[in-house]
Length: 313
Image 1 (tube, one colour):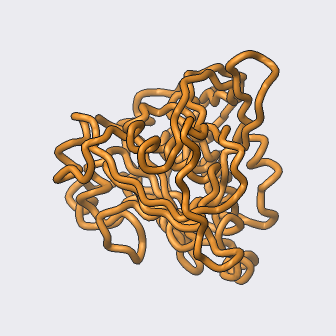
Image 2: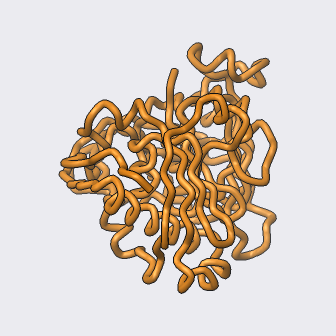
């Protein structure tokens, strides 16, 4: 089943994958060759309980990103070309930051919007012409010289925010993107502590260490993650069908987490031999003492009001 999985590595930037098979069979993150998606979770889902029964309010990504925009972060020039399918299979895919440039490989306009605005669920984004999903692009964008030195010093969430800021500018200038927000109520999951209590291991990482989350279709290994980090990682897993997961555990620590489960049929071939007979939801409760509870979430919906195919370089 197609799904959108996002991740970060070593303080890098969210990588966009259009299906789990691609994640498992191709090297999708720069400088890392394992079979698992490696994610340093940098931007947590901000959640708060609402007054209404069974409702969770999630702070919208646009509001977060406007406040988190990095001054001076911009591309000087960018070359945008259609992805060559004969070449794409031999290279990384995603958003790949380097010292003085950012490369984009094999991404659709919709995937770039999801990345740039840190959209948590596919159901939050609507509108736009069909080519947004059909046409894939490679981009070679050079960072403005006035920002290169500052960018080189950035790590973790700060570096991620800078790349998102630059990518939003590129979408607006080269794709002429016009994006609107509107409140939207979506089916969601609340991550809560199970009746028997949490079974979590406090992290052994040094204080201030960046959270690392590695996940494929049937396993998760993480270090120094908060429950908000875990909820965000689960949101991006194809097995949950794009539902937003919000943290309602009340746990404030950071933990080292290992989890294994049997994927659903749509992901079974990509996963290889089953590591545990439990489903993802069963494994959460049995192995971590957590469970997913169905709820509704009020989130920012994103609507594409206008977009154009990029012109010449």
